[in-house]
Length: 265
Length: 265
DNA sequence: AAGTGCGTTGCGCTAGTTGCAACAGATTTT
DNA sequence: AAAATCTGTTGCAACTAGCGCAACGCACTT
Image 1 (spheres, rainbow over the protein chains, first blue to last red):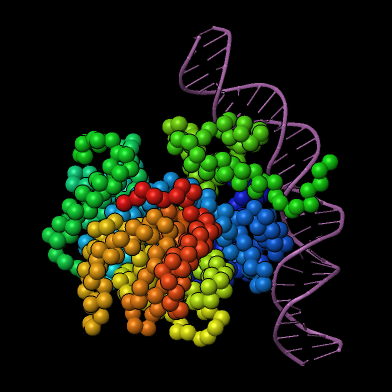
Image 2 (cartoon, protein in one colour):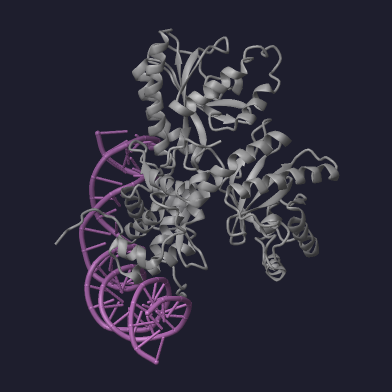
């Protein structure tokens, strides 16, 4: 009947779906957590299943329950584990650099990494003026993120083309048609250490981004600084040089080997 | 036979044991992760079991594998889950600690975060004595808030100076002239985990504040306890030590990195 | 070539998970 | 008060999925 989908324990998938729901209050301010029935309905699963899974998760500290409201939210152990990821270290090292950029340009500064075909924003430093949309922990397709061009800069052209031609989520397909423009941008990122991107997502502004290298000489992340106040192109490139220099300092802080910039593949 | 009345799914327990092993690279040298056999031996489990579990975990993004060394380490998804819900958790977890402080000192206790150049108070627990001014949801410039010193404690000195020199709203410009005093206070916050602030806003009392770290190793908030009844300075510092300890407990609940920060910029 | 350590996979057996339905509290409605 | 609804938990038989063993492929060393 149903295909056996290679390897994925069903229990794990269920547990992670639950955790994802509990993390999913990016929209409103549901700070109280969620109840069993609500979660079960949202996942299309049996109440009993969710109830038992949550109890197991609670016993392990992955979720916690308010004894009064009986609602669940994510638990201490998840946060403890998250602190041991290498992303946490990356964030810690990059934060001062991002703050400096945010202050210098009075624009939001982000640090993004590539996960599959998605760009995940690890940390966002808002500009001093206001508090903008929170991108932290959010993934967008690489083709639609400003930082995407920097993150793919050391890829082989053939693989980039393959990724660009992959189908996008419904309704978003037209924005990135210009494949040649992409290839040019990637070359620019390689040569100059930064690249300027136009608007691609409705609610994400144009941005200047720069790749960050790790100790192996691979691109592990990208700095991205948004441009809300449209200046002329020359100004954007002046920004780019500063951001590229910052990315180089950050790369050095991550233990990047003292290797010349332009000589990757 | 050992009857486990604990309803804990064995698969979940196994997965978490594995994650815990992968997290345990904080002790010695930073390894690049661990191999299947090493993990299996360390847990006293079958290799095959661990191999299959790790593949499932990898498919879900909970762990990542270096394609070259075939070693596993913790994955991006843990970090993403934690990041998306970090702020809600801050509010959740801090409430009991704030209540304890408010009861202990019979003073108002607050939880503040930094938003741009403003300090926003997320939670206020009033002391039992009387109704005070409600600060919840109120923003004040970082230079004028008692919690400001704690919130900036992990910033680079140059950034702090820049922020301090930024123009204030009309009519409020004179209060924070003492830049050096600020830098000293930040050092104190870093060294001792708390800092005592004098009166700065007319209607805001002096206060003792302490920085709170999150799972990324960044300061995400600050506990602030007001001092309405002026005692001697020694007493304020005694308060500070208690508040700093509370902030540490709160940070632990947020998954603060185990290695105490000391030597950042 | 044989030897070692590593990680993956095939397969019978058993144990753990599933889904239904009944149950028990907590609120709300009649 | 009783009834109606909501909530979340639990007992049970059917069944599926995870377990351990052993064999296998692979990369290095001897």
